[in-house]
Image (cartoon, rainbow, N blue to C red):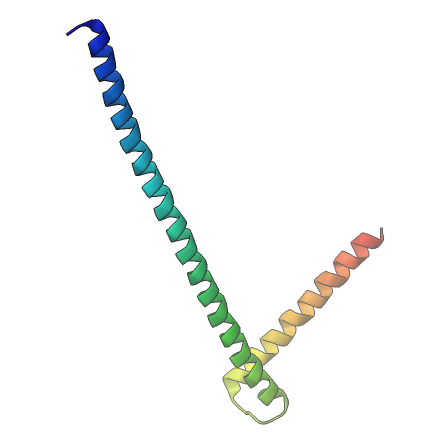
Length: 101
């Protein structure tokens, strides 16, 4: 076998290996895309669960504030929510004061 034949064989083998690597990379990329899509769906569902939980909490807070519930735990939790909301208002006022400078 001549040097030219060896070079041709080498090039053919390199092309096959490169082609296999390209197919493998494409498959891995496709898998990564699918995983990303599924992760996005998982995030959507988790966000929906959090919205449902927030709605449940809002419902019970409204009942509590209207005097329709007298659950000690809910009363204490409601006080904590009110205190944290006040902190948020205080922080927002602090930011507003800084922006005025």
